[in-house]
Structure formats: C-alpha cells, structure tokens
Image (cartoon, rainbow, N blue to C red):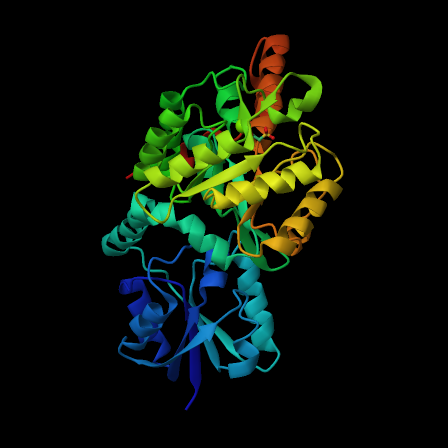
Length: 431
Ligand code: SPV
Ligand code: MG
C-alpha cells in the first residue's frame, strides 16, 4: 500500500483538515506529522494545547493510520526518513514566505520520485470562526501573560521588537520572513519608554505617565496576541509600583523591566553625558521584593535592569547588583551598555552565568548592534530586545514624505516611497 504524508500544525481540527485527510486516504495509508512546539513557534503559530494533546487529536481523526513528530518546518527530518509516495498540502502555500517550504518539499520528493498533491484550501465560515477563536484565546490575559515564560523555555533566544501603537503592534505580530528556506518572526513585543514618549513628541523622562502607557499597551493588545514586556522606567515610588504590577498582570502583560535609577530618569543612551542617579542596592531590592509580593500569578515577571555599565560604575558593581536583585526576587536581569563593542556585555554574561545558570538574561543591543542573536544566545542571553528600530525607521520616512510634498506642492513626487493605498486598507483585519 502507498503512503501519504501530511503535516498539521493546528490545535483544532476543522473542515479543511478533514478534507485533506479524505483526499489523502484515496491515495494510500495516511501518516500525519505533528509539528513540534519549537518548529511551530517559528511558523507564525503558538500552541494553545500541548504537543501530546495535538498528537492525540490527530490520531483520533478517522482515516489517520499514525502520527509522527515533525521537528523541522522544512520537512527535512520526515520526508527522507519516511519516503512517502505522496505529500498532501492545501494549495495556499504557493505565495509568500511559505513558498520556499513548498519548493523545498518538491525537491525532497524529487530525490526519490515522491509526488506533491495539492488540495484546494477550504475557507468557509466554520473555518474562519475557528481561526478567530484560536486568535482570541491567545489574546486573553491568562494565555498572553504566561507565553513569555514558555518562550524562554522553548527558544534559544526570545526575539523582541519594539511596538508603540496598534500599527507597530501589527508589524510585530504579523511580520514573517523566509530566510534560507526557514520562516522566522518575532516572539514578543517591547513597549519602550523612549518610543512611547517620542511618539507623543515628549522627552523620555518618565513624563508620559502610567495611564498613558497603559493606553498604548491596550492599543497594542487590541490587535495582537504576542507577549508584551513593558519598559517600566524606574518603577516609580515603591508604593505606586505595587499597584502598577497588579494592573499590568491583570491586563496580561508578561513582564515589566525596571531600572535601578532614581530621581529624574533620563534615557540610558545619554550615559554619563547627563546627570543620572543610580538607586542604592537596598532601595531597589526592596522595590523588587514589594513588586513580587504584590503580584497574584506565577506567570508575571519583574526583571531588574542594571545601569552600572551605562553609568560607568564598573563590572563588579553590576555583578554585585545582579546577585542582590535576584536574591530580592527578580525574575530576570537586564544588563545594559551603550558601547559599540559588545565586549562588556559578554563579560557580564560570562561572569553572571558562571554563578547563576538559571535566571533569564535580557539585553538591548542598540549601540552594540553588530552582535548576532546566535552570539548572544551562546553567551547565555535569553531575551534580545530591538528597542527602538521601528520608530527610528518610520520617522525619517515620514519626514522625507513631508519634505517632498512641501517642495513639490503636490503628492505625486512622494508616491514611489509610499505603501499603495490598497495595501494600507487591507493591512487591518476586519471582524
Ligand atoms: C527604551 O527603549 O526606552 C529603553 C532602552 O529603555 S534604551 O533606550 O536603550 O535606554
Ligand atoms: Mg526606557
């Protein structure tokens, strides 16, 4: 009997999947591949049920002979091993980033004479509702909040991009690229104080208050499902911080990062060019401990950001603070630097990891931007934050468009740099 292989990456079986199985079984014994969690999260999906539950779900479908694990989104592990006579897939992967996977599957099949069968993709009201329901589930606070802790366990490094509005949230949520046959996307979003302030035309000095920051978070949450890390500046007064922890947690924010500065906070990238005061270890530890005591779930994370390298207080001071803040209950350490060379970040990570193998490490490579995710991951970094690039990309583009219109006395000259009108109206999902 011939064998037919198809890969599923769904948490819910709908008409479309049943149609694939019904078509597949006409050609032989049906083997379903369950995409592993690690592969799934790079593939624009996040599981809402465990891998074992997905395997059980697929095994129970009438017509499925067995379920195997597929670890590679490019089918490299399963096709050469199983050599199925046919691979069945919906006909909706010919365009966009998935097209590379399709080409690769065809190549793998050609190596031994296997064939690709494409089934018309089913898109009806029932399928649409199920997709929508899954998305809603992921956007709910209880799912979104814990997703960051899950990602830290699942990913070599959690890739986080700044978002400061619904629109930038959509970019963080939906941007998927194909690179070397693999799909990739961001895992999480950073609500930066710098970008949230800049977007309002205000300086980054804790002037934009928590009510305004919560509005930004809410705008982002309305249109996304990915976890949110809030830049909480200094955390403010401990007596206020505890209330904000509760609010953020209830909203479904996954983590707040607070920095060990006090008084008038200025952006770290100014370094010692402006006057900035570092908080004492005792005060900041007490703030962390109070925040941890206030939170109600085990999911929420309070991450301590150490400014010793920014303020040129030295590596030993940074490490002493890291030790103290972890002891006070911090769920992670962010170490910041404004040097172009990542050497001091690597030194911190190596020395910290020599004493503490567990506590998640976070870095923001704005200045030391030549460092790769792979290098950071191999130094023990768990979360990389691209803290301001979307804002910095948008500003010069908007200014250039404004200048072109002013100098041309019409909009035609700016047109080639603009997104087509049709595209911008389809960017936003309608319910
Ligand atoms: C932010 O994005 O606001 C940050 C990171 O705090 S930095 O601008 O590098 O200080
Ligand atoms: Mg900030």
